[in-house]
Image (cartoon, rainbow, N blue to C red):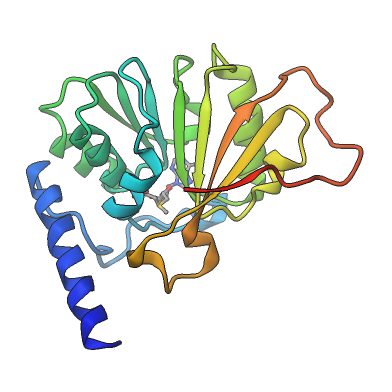
Amino acid sequence: MKPVDKLGAALLAMESALIDLRYGAWIGGTPRPKPDSHVAVGAYSFTNTSYRVLEAIFRGRLHADDVLVDVGSGRGRVLNHWLHTGHRGPIHGLELDTRYAGQCARRLRRFSNVQVRTGDAIANLPPETTLCFLFNPFDRANMLRFREAVLGTISDLYRLRVVYYAPTCLDVWSDDLRWDVAIHRLDLWSVRHQPERYRTYAVITCRNPTAPDRRECAPDGGGITSG
Ligand SMILES: C[S@@+](CC[C@H](N)C(=O)[O-])C[C@H]1O[C@@H](n2cnc3c(N)ncnc32)[C@H](O)[C@@H]1O
C-alpha cells in the first residue's frame, strides 16, 4: 500500500472510531473468536459497512417519517449512521447473532426510537417498514424467502425501498416483474480498490405486487445511474 493510501485509511479509521464513540463504543473490526456461526442457515459473516459508504448511499434518501430497518444489523454501524443523520423516527436492527444483537441493544438502549431484535430478520420484519437496508446478509435461498416475506408483510409496498449494498443475488429482484431495480455506483476514494460489488448498491421498489413473478423475456437488469 502506498504511504498516501495508508494515511488515508488511518484517517478514515479514526473518523469512524470517533463516530462510533458518540454512540457508546468502538465497534470496528471483527471480534475474535467469531460469534455463533450461522453458515448452515445461509447467513454470511459479519462485516461493518463504512460510514463513508452509508453517507453516500443515504444522502437525500431518508424522510422524517421513514421506518428504517437494517436486515442483519451486526454490531449496529447502520443504526449509528441513521441516528447520526438526526433521524428520530423508528429504527429497527434485526440480527441473527445473539452476541452482536445483545451488545448492540445494550449500547443503544438510551435511544428510545431504536429497537434491536435477535432472530431471523425475515420472520421479524415490521409491517410498517418503509426502508430496508441489506449489506449482503445472506444467500439466494434466504433472499428469495426475504422477497416473499416483504410481499406478505409490508403494509405499504408502494412506499417501500429496499437498499441492497454489495449485492450478490440481485437477480432475485431483477428477474421478477413485481420489482424495479436501479443500480448505483459509488464513486468514493475509500472503496476505489475494492471489488466491484463493494462499489455497487441497488434501490429496489415495488412495481406491481400482483404481476407474474418471473420475467418472460431477458431481464434488462434495471437502469444504471451513478451515485
Ligand atoms: C455483512 S453484515 C452487515 C452488518 C450491518 N448491516 C452493517 O452493514 O454494518 C451481515 C449481517 O447479517 C446477519 N444475518 C445474516 N442472515 C440473517 C438473518 N436471516 N436474520 C438476521 N440477521 C442475519 C449476519 O449475522 C451479519 O451480522
